[in-house]
Image (cartoon, rainbow, N blue to C red; front, side, top):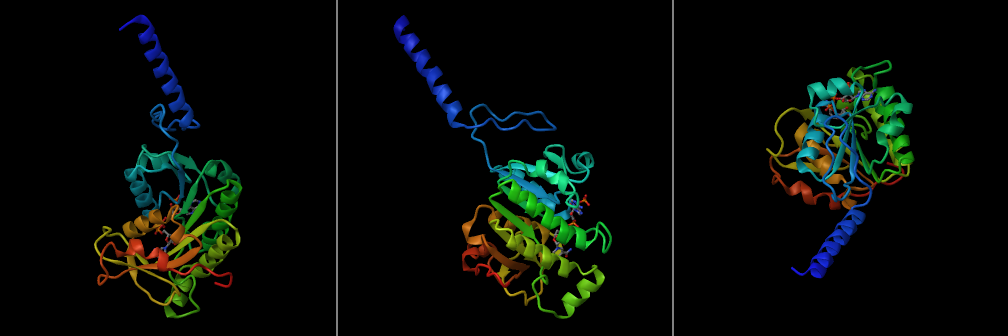
Length: 276
Ligand SMILES: NC(=O)c1ccc[n+]([C@@H]2O[C@H](COP(=O)([O-])OP(=O)(O)OC[C@H]3O[C@@H](n4cnc5c(N)ncnc54)[C@H](OP(=O)(O)O)[C@@H]3O)[C@@H](O)[C@H]2O)c1
């Protein structure tokens, strides 16, 4: 190849490389635990922050998000070292306690989406529903608003919107008024002005997902159960989904419904109104 042509080709390649680099935007962060850097020129993906990632539902959410590979992922834990050891060092674990608002600003920094899978471990006291399902959710919501999060997805519970009924009364009795505090957590999210989705699962079961159809319901009148894996799939499907935004719905299994039918059900749900 003549020298002048070779020089032109080289310059064109350098220019193309520079353009690709500029188009990629800010360089994505280094992984905290593995030290891996994303490939040069890779576009920065939206960041999903999962609170309650150490819980039984939270673990399934981060596993599904990771295998989908579509988002950057940050997993929050009260004890990130234990979480990395017990759940996986491949996740980007960051320390956060929802009852300690000062831990949340950096934990949510840069987040596009926040998923809350937190739930009280105790029936009273600082780890009880008042300070986790209400106060903790409110702290997360405040931090998400300050961080400019695009959507907040809250796992609440069937019964949190009910007017009464034996099941609600019994769960409140056993769980330290958990449904009442969850209802207040939901209200804090609705009042925040943040785009949101509230998912109210029925009784959670540790069985594989995708085994039966799912019902997305409103009005909080029907009881049922649902696998944590299916809750994880539904929660992830709400991310960036305009048909799921500004809506609250219950989620239960129904073997009579075709397995994948739920995916097209979001648009049939009514948006929340201020009084709900
Ligand atoms: N159990 C049911 O049948 C049922 C039914 C409907 C809805 N729900 C709701 O569904 C959600 C998921 O339930 P699950 O049973 O899968 O959850 P889970 O296994 O009980 O896990 C609860 C999660 O909340 C975290 N958490 C608790 N207090 C925290 C705090 N102060 N700061 C940060 N994180 C805190 C826990 O972290 P640590 O690991 O650090 O403790 C854990 O990751 C919960 O909101 C639950 O109430 C449950």
